[in-house]
Every structure is written in structure tokens, then in C-alpha cells.
Length: 422
Length: 166
Ligand code: SF4
Image (cartoon, rainbow over all chains, first blue to last red; front, side, top):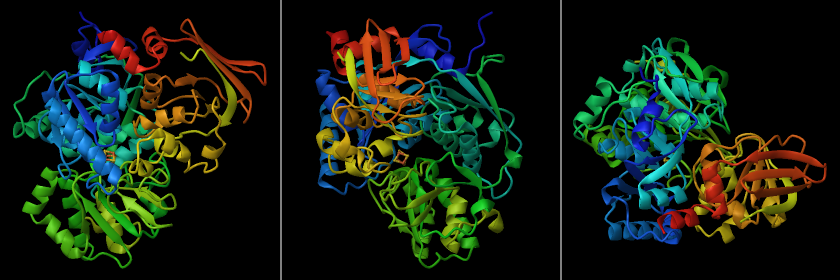
């Protein structure tokens, strides 16, 4: 009998051609390489210094102009020109301004599938783990090395099993459960480690919700955060790409270093308070905190279901934005944008007074879009609330579910979203 | 290669994320580390950039370099003349980025180090040593994994990839 193995061990064994166990350092073949306008300019510089002359496989290299979307300084315009020019010369695909966030679009286009090894020069590349891939964030030099060689060296991570049980109450979102997980892990609880989701409630989560968990796992330090492949994964991919590859499953008895049981039934709406995504409280503890800016968007909370939820809550709460509140809505991708245009969601949000901005990262890290004013409190669907994250060091950023964000836009205060359950 | 680094300890706390090392906002204007180094740690210690000296060694708490994987966080530190970071632990992406650029990330207990202590770091035959000369203490002495030593000995990933391909 062969040794019981985790999903990470199986994928990295397949990619390295070695029967690899946690702790081994292996040289792996990469399926997809992602760069962004924030990381690719430096990677292009490393590419030259490494004397790279071509990409290992142009069809497997994707650059996304998402962080500066649109560019608002001469330098960022220059970064875009440089990335476009490089991609054009080497035959790689560019996702241009407004096409969306790199890992979101890679998933939407069916470029990421079960069992793949995805290397992205963006920490939230891990989001793609929702589709059963081993997806990791790297820096620009490793991006360049992977662009040239199609390979990356990796230490096979130990695995933390996150067991999902019970079911979320009405008004409680995947974001709340993911924030609970991040708080449980602390900022480095999963450092160097892989998270694998399992348990009886796994099948209750849509792929969009799985993205939220995998995305936020990075705030616990996780190297990767993988979901098992099931009917929901196959349905997500069905309309997007031909299925390929084998779904890796974790063997019974595979070694895990820690098991975290999340009892979903016991989770209340959560809010991460300034200035760390690991400082998480129940919404009741800070209800009433005045809010001057609400941001709905990003690779955590900028998908179709997030905007549907936000609009529904806003309408149930009176269909108006409270005086003194700026509501900014930024779809994570063009696909999200187009679907929200087609079903009227964006028009209704704009009619209420929301500022709808170009698809991409938007206001998430202060590189593009609306910047909070001095001393403002912001409630956001994003994943990070470090000081100065949104471009103003005097602002205080709180993180919550799309429903809680939308309700705060309507009331001007942090409010328990269970108060307006539909 | 950096076999020998000696300089003052510059203390930092726990969970210093890459946005605190250099804010994303500054990256909108330039990627030139020689300019960006003026804003090193500006969010958490506005006086730091003006006081940093070549040879200084950063001494931090837990989880140094967490958050974004942006590599410029490592290269801006190098541009400021810092060639080693001591911390109780590192976030994985920063750890890799540091090695890939020839910045030494050294995991050790940093509790006993005071601001300004003289720190000496050596990498010799794949053995990494860090000493607190002021207090006459060896902070750590470890063997470095072969692949990591190869990259560090090449001065970073650039030269390493060139050698492997050449
Ligand atoms: S939306 Fe925010 S967290 Fe996601 S990739 Fe963009 S900047 Fe990073």
C-alpha cells in the first residue's frame, strides 16, 4: 500500500516527478504563471538580468493590469506600456485595464483547474485553491525565473485540515466564517503551511464562497489553501473550459499538523478592526461605529454574488445611502462587471448614489481609485486593513461581509446585518 | 558574497508587513529603490529612513514581511544598505524574496537584542552565524539548506538562473 498523502503532497509529487512528502524540497513544473502591473515590471527587469530570451510557454503566461486600473500617475502608465510591450514581443496574454484581477480572471477563463500548480506574483494567487489547484504567491524574481524555466522550487508544506461543520445562520456570510478562521490562525498560524478544507459542510459552499476562504487564508500566512473538487467545481468550469487533469483528493489518514474545526452554526457576523485582518470581533462589539466610506470590491468581495447581496441589503434598508457616506463599488473583473450590467445591478447601485469604478483592484491598496479622507472610518469587503493600506495612514479600515458593508452604507454606522435578513 | 556583515541593530516589532516596509502608494511614482528607500518604514517609524546607515541590521519580532509578496520590500531594504534581517520568524514570501536577492533572513530569538547593539553575521561554507557582539552572545548558528546556500552564494536568483542555464 502506498503512503496516505495530502492534496499538496499529491500535486507536488505529480509536478516534480518525485514521491514527495511534507518537508521535501522539490523542483516543480508550473502550469500557469501570473504577473500583475505591480510585480511584472520588476520581473521584466529580472528577466533581462537573468538573460532570458523567451518564455517557456507563452500560452501559460498571463499578465494583468489590475492594480493601477486605471493608471493615475505617469510612472504607472509607463509600467503598463512596458508590460504590454513585453507581452507582445513574447506572445503572452495581457489582461488590460478593466479586464480584472489576475487570479480572478485566470479562474473565470478556466485557465486554472484541479491539480494545477499556479505561480503568481501576487500574494492572493492562493485564491485559485478554491478550484483544487496548488496556487502560491511569489515575488518578481521567482516570477521571472518561472517565466523562463517553467519551474519553481518548493518546500512541500505541512497541512492544516480545516473541517467545516454545521451551517451558517441567515445574515452570516462565508466572509464571516473566513474571518473567524483567520482570527483563529493568527497572522502566521499557517505560515509555510497548506490549508485543506474538508468536512460535511464543504459541499454547501459555492465556488464564489470558496474563493473567499482561500483568499483570506493568506492573512493567516498560508502558502496555499485548497478545496476538494466536487459537483460545484465541475459546474463552475463546465461553461468555461474543457475539464482536464485529475482531481487530487486527500487520503484518509494523511498526516496533518493541525486540525481546526469551524462550527459554522456558531459564527456571528464578524468585523476585522484596524489595523490587522487578524483582529476580529463579533459585529456586536463595535456596532454603532460611524462609517464615512464603504468599499465593495476586490478579490475577496467583488464578485457577482457579493454585489447582489449588497444591493439586496441596501434596498431592504431603505434604498438610500446615508448622508456623509461614500459608497464605492468595483467589480473584480470584466465578466463580473458585464453580468452586473446585464442584470441591472450596477445601474441600481448607481441610481442609489454609488460610485462604480473600473474593474480591477480599485481602492484596495491605495494604488488606484478612491482614497479615504483624513481620519475616516472605512468599511470594506477586502482582505487587508493595514494602516495606510488604502492610501491614507490616518484612515481606519474595518473589514466585513458585503451585507454588513452595504448596511453600513445605508445607516452610516457598523450595523449587524442580521437586522435586515430578507 | 556577503560572508561578513557588521552593524548596528535596528529594532522593529512583530508583524511588520510589506506595506509598512514600503507603501504601495509610493510605488505608483517610481520603482527606483534609491528613491523609495527615503520612505522605508515611513508608516510605522517616520524617522527611520533618515537614520539608517549602511551595515545596519534589522532586528524584528515575529512574522516579518507578512502581507503582500511584493519583492520591492526586500530590495528597498537592500538599497538602504541593510544586508541582513534578524527576526523570530518570517512570512514565507518575504523569506523567499530576501534569499532571491541576497538579503539574509535569519530566524533567531531576538528578545535580548537592544537598539544599537553591534551585530555580526557570517555565511561560511553553508553555515550561517549571527552574533550580538555588544553582549558577547551567539544568536544563532545553523546550516543552510543546499539550494538556499547555492542561491545566496550566487548573490541571488538572477545569477543562480544564469548559471543553471549557462
Ligand atoms: S484586490 Fe487587493 S488584495 Fe486583491 S489582488 Fe488587488 S490589491 Fe491585491
